[in-house]
Image 1 (tube, one colour):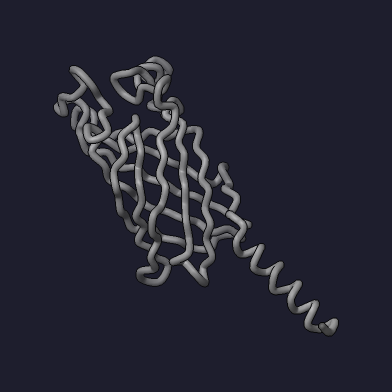
Image 2 (cartoon, rainbow, N blue to C red):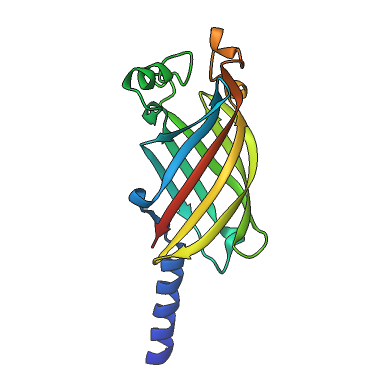
Length: 183
């Protein structure tokens, strides 16, 4: 093998290894929140602890994969007292189910800067197949992934007992996310 061929092979392997490396999430520039109606007033509450693992190459978006794990006890709804309530058995049951997770099963290119994502969402021990559109754009040396995933909270048993009544807290919840990540 010539020196040129050897260098070309090393470069090719290095490039493939770099492309296959998962992106590192910039938590300071990322967010995950839940938007819902409480007594017909819109409420947006942020999860303060989450982790996203994204394998993404803009040249091959159909080979991408993603996993997001959210600490269910980290939902900040604006009051320490309410934050403790939401972690209890009737809501997230964070002692038994400390994490909610999303794992992609397919990511397909759509229009420019858009992807269609399918996967499995697990909250409180219940798993459902979900699909949602996602935008992706470069920003400051990072890839920024943004989207919204509408769910029904009762499908995941979030709100047991008297909290099944959707007159106080609506069944519809939108999970909004913005994940900034780079090599």
